[in-house]
Image (cartoon, rainbow, N blue to C red; front, side, top):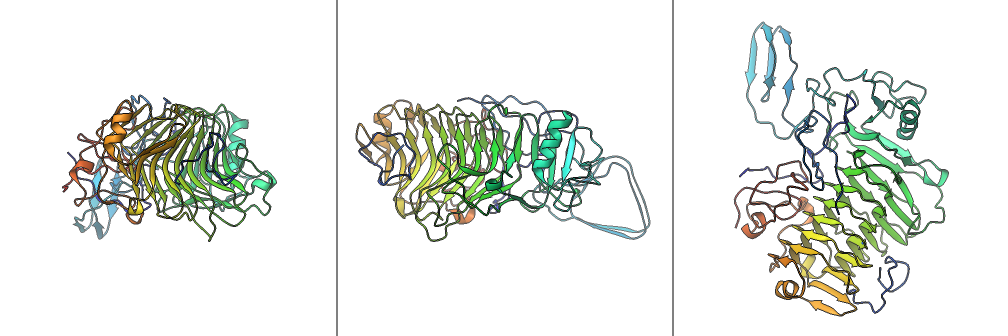
Length: 513
């Protein structure tokens, strides 16, 4: 058993760097049976296995959850804490060093040196780290381009002369044919979908954000690379063709990674921060859609027939006094992996959906979802014969008021539902046939492959602390999880999941109640 430190809201240790040597890295009982996504009418209606790449060489953290993950490659340097010094260091003169430092290689020191031991938490990639992302010898790689907000698109994209925009770097990578990694430094990077200026990923070229401006460290929580929607015009949009900031088209494989960005979207009646038709790995990002009066539907990640790995992300919605349907993840006919995400819907004034599935056999594993006590709120909505595996999820609702799982149609039920916390008014509610189950006993008696689920008398975690478990949490939650390590061996912060597993996105191996 391992003792993990209490995570701070928004901080992650799952960031990984890209390969340097070519390695790939309500009540919703509506009478209709329509499969249209919610939000277009007054009736709220209307969603497998995929392989995730390993982290970039050189890290130990990262939530490289895969469907049937078998990873033996090294991973990229941790993103917050443990500091390794340069292999050979020569220091002259009086030197004071603070912090626990591990030094590899020969070290020669002349002069008086005072060293004070302190405790450092978190993993930080520093200039002495090794491996792809490590900043020892960083720059000059034939397979890497660099982007910084003060760069120029006329530059070659080296560490000394970085490019200015992410899309220019992607286009250049496509032209060169030798680039598999784009590293992006802290800063704001504008997109304008209305003028055909948004980020469109290509297969085999991964994006890694969160580098310090001098490239000496990578910590996406501290050195924020933010995708900012500056579209001046909201073009006509639809559910299947939303306004978006980042697009992952068909043909982008699971070895292509989007890691370490804050992604927002602010315009368009139908909007999604990410529109995904491919199978990419989307991890360690903060998804921040903005709601406004022009909204019809606001989506964090919209999956349209792709099978992506959406792992270890944080979803936060910003509301500007408007009641419109908001969906963190919505997917049509996807067999992807949605795991280890923290989905905070506490800022949504209208109808809120944590995960909305139309068809497909998605794996929904180890997520933490928080629902507010306003309007109609759903943890997981199933439609169009969606049959996901739903294991190890922590679904909390303010005042136990929400619907944890909604089933629209008799064929839209979990293929398995095990070791979940279902802290809602209804554990499952649905129509055609009508279902109004308020207890775990009803849930497990009526569903095949449903077992070891919990419903507590009160919520135990909230969005203010990132839904982190701690010593005050029930042992039935901190030690009551199902083993999902074949798919997601680490939690949202990159900490190894250890038996007995915790339920939700955060692993906790300390004391419990």
